[in-house]
Amino acid sequence: MPISSIATPIIGEGGRTGTWRTERPVLDPTKCATVKQNKLVCLLCWLYCPEGNISRTIPPKIDYVYCKGCGACAEECPSKAISMEEEAKFEE
Image (cartoon, rainbow, N blue to C red; front, side, top):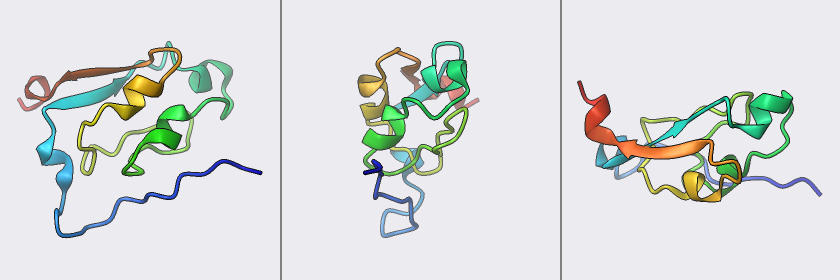
């Protein structure tokens, strides 16, 4: 049975919730198993994202418009390809 994520980002009462973030998940493709093997082999980041903001692609892409910066993707990544970085660094 295939594993799937059921959350999908929508414009709701909270609107574009990416502005709530204090930290941003940043993917290092040189560490990502999916990128290294050029196959959809891991994708735990996609599976555990509670908001469905990570694409099931090679490489996975994070939708920063809706990402709240919870860090679940970074926590679940077995290869530590996702790190949480201060949002202020990207606001320039």
